[in-house]
Length: 433
Ligand code: GUN
Ligand code: ZN
Image (tube, rainbow, N blue to C red):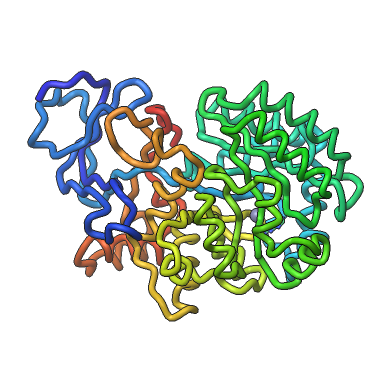
């Protein structure tokens, strides 16, 4: 077969083609033992078995059996100003926010500080093989400018927004609802759908948003129906109680969002640990998604999400995996996948490595509504590629000796993997690492 391409990657190739939660693990992916991935400019031209293509040797980059070529990772929920606050000791969610997160976020009114931090944050994403993310900035528009500017340079798929808060937080990080609205309008006009960037309307959670603010959020979504909406839901019991106290007429936490028409197919809600059956049905009916943040739940002492419970009730509820930095403890997708496995064990289930991998790649793309662009290898998709060195550390190298199949290999990567497994990373066909 003759095809036009700039370069080709040859080696073991893995990519999802469907959701393993609905079609089963085996039917959810393609795996080519001796595969090729053809790239032209920023896109994938084709993927398949080496023997089916006639390729020019000088255009082929070859990887031996210790490497896996796969779609790069997607982190659907994290807070970039909290990168510097990771490891805040000894508190539950609401106290942790006061003591650590809000203090860090208060610094991001300073555009120069925000620019320097945004660059570092994105370098850390790249180190960990992450090329797309749903990101919370601080409540200052400067923090959004800084992030989008740096992300645009690197071509990363960043969906992000100014955090909206007009109450119940320190003065330095709350602003009047109308002010955030006006600032957000300007940010949308400048950055939304610019290159790989997308704007996310980001009311932090209902505790910090007045009814007036939620009404303005509703108005903004009406004006820009293709906006992603990101917030938090049902993370811990103290937070849920306080939320319901503040919205006495609401039937549930999810109902608060629904009353303001904020549950859309583009809504990504962090956590969902304490969702009721009614709320699960509501979110699934609205096609909204949950960002499961397992290392963050462990760290804050939250009740772990019962992923299989959710899936059994509503297999159509979209779920993705997220680090939730800075309450999460690592950006490394292997670590987050391992934490998701531990959460599943705490509910007497066992999350398979294929499902965990899906949640951090194509599942993440679906939750961020970029699954027609990235998250898998298919003709016309962005060439967003991670090349995994399965022998990157001494421990991995030893453990891989006795691995018998692909599932086990991914499970060992989940258990022992580090950022150093990311041997190379391409975004839109450009090598970043
Ligand atoms: N709920 C509201 N804001 C936050 C946050 O920054 N981190 C976490 N884990 N939960 C939240
Ligand atoms: Zn969060």
